[in-house]
Image 1: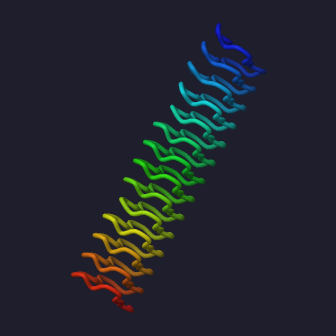
Image 2: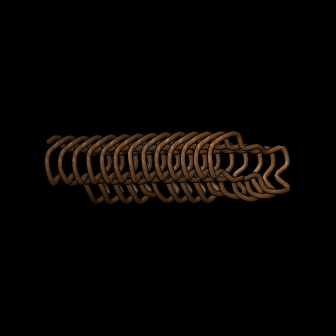
Image 3: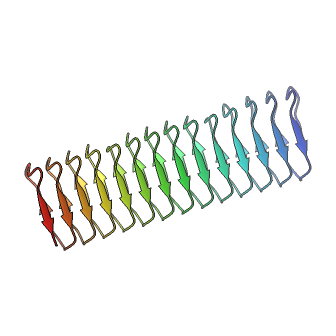
Length: 232
């Protein structure tokens, strides 16, 4: 169905697809029950089922998949997958495959590739998650990344990264820090430029900058112990 005032818009094939009124220069090609909502320009949906582009999401695209959504986010795209969502003015962002992944709340120029239940939220611009499950980049963590693993989190820490592992965390202004693998490791409390590599419940905290822990269990660098290290 093509509603009135949808100038220069088109629907080609498929079943149950709809472009609502005041939608300009937009198109749906094939698929089932896909929709482009009010006041959208230059956007498209190609195939898939139940995909939607909502108002003020200009120049955006969904290619295939099921139940994917772009809401109030311009120049963004979703390629396949299921129940993925880009919303709340997260412009120039993308999700490729996976399921239940989300980029939202002003997280511009960010991306998620695969995995499930991963999210980039709350002003975390230019950040990315590649694969894994329930990983999260949150609260102004710009230019940060998580690659794989499960339940890893970067919060309020820019230019930081977590590679693999489970339940690892970088948070509270610990910029330029990293965690590689392991379980329950953390870098926190303004411990910038620090790292934890592997191990189990190792922590760098309390403004202990430029410090590192390699392996072992329950090791801790704390109390303004800058440029310190623990091996195993």
